[in-house]
Image 1 (tube, rainbow, N blue to C red):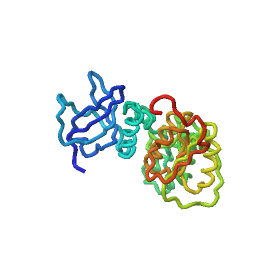
Image 2 (image 1 turned 90 degrees about the vertical axis):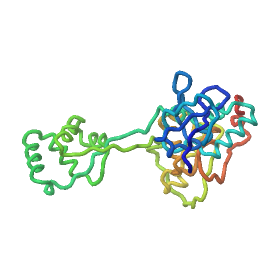
Image 3 (image 1 turned 135 degrees about the vertical axis):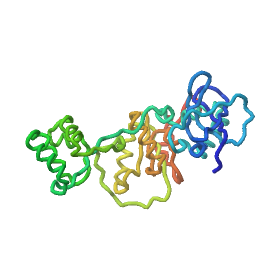
Image 4 (image 1 turned 120 degrees about the vertical axis):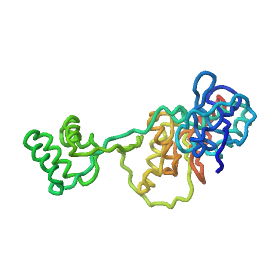
Length: 303
């Protein structure tokens, strides 16, 4: 891909026109059609979607992009083509269609990934260098509570969330931080997905080989849990294969489910009518449950 000098964008405002911006050299390798960007607009900043990359532009007073929002393009070229078709067919602004294609939590980029702290397992005490061993001996004499927590961490076989460790051992965060400050343990941060069906148990049935992706639409959000249970049970052995999109998800859950689909980890999407715009790749099947239901029809644009 050639480095673009300019991009043509549609801004997240009720304005029926497109704008050209120059691409800073630092962003030229990372920007593409479908990317989300922050741009100067009038006397403020605005979020926008890249519709095209350009080598030249005849526009006057072109200003540079301020920032790239997210690394990968948020919307594929095929979905952009669908958006343009819908805009023309339903006689509504392209920006209005884009609001249907991209969830608000993705467009605004205000919600990020949930993080959790992990306690790393330690090697056995006898393997420590002499200086560290002295620290541990001193710990046992001066801070027995810290020593007790340290011993529990030594017994770990794999990383454990700090909150879970403290809950199981009845120690507080201050005791854990004291061990970190002494240089005896290490904490690391990892991303945790907010699964709207976390904690539920699913029984595996016969596994199927998945070649392509599928979208399953249900007329009412209330029907989603039973449909999800049916599909997750069917594909219980295939981790993360099913994703859910509907308006009752929290902003964090919607953020994580959308990214699970966008990254290709989810191959089946279940949800109400807006789930038809899920960023799935290689869609081979769309199932419309109870397709005669009027809830599939939207009165406001795009219809």
